[in-house]
Image 1 (cartoon, rainbow, N blue to C red):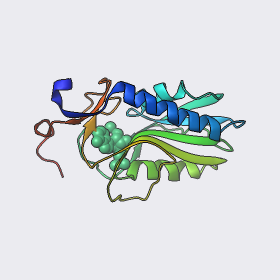
Image 2: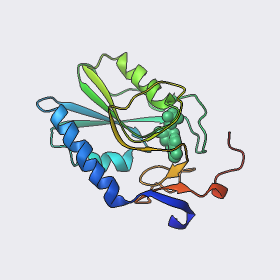
Image 3: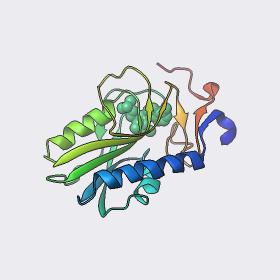
Image 4: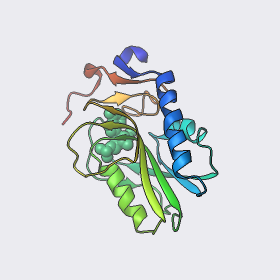
Length: 182
Ligand code: IMP
Ligand code: MG
């Protein structure tokens, strides 16, 4: 699997060190508040598991499942919510966790949808953010790493549902990404 990477961007110790820092900041910012983490599946699963165990606060966890990529390396622009009932967010302090901020479509749609259910506060935490012009203006309140506009896999991130179990994050070799991109 690792041989399919053109290069490694962040190895596991580097990711975990950064999570220690983010978790410390979250624990400080939400001290004496009850936090509700909403993880966007499936990409944030590994990130969520490692981050939440570092947060020194009582917290609740909910998951949200959306689809926009359909397993390929380009966004379709449309965000489909896969569950009938959304998590109960009313009067709660919500922290949305996602793997990566790319076009911003997904997080903009999720934020907008959750805001209609009147949370007390809402913030966004992403592991990665691509440095690029976004279709939707979304800012992460907590960010692991900023990366270039490249397709990355590992540590939860997939290409066509593969590579999620790689412990590191790397750039997928170009010839492995379907040629009909864009
Ligand atoms: P956005 O809506 O374009 O911001 O991106 C939404 C989703 O696309 C993310 O939550 C990821 O699941 C997926 N995605 C975007 N860029 C990448 C990438 O480089 N590798 C793997 N998945 C990605
Ligand atoms: Mg994905």
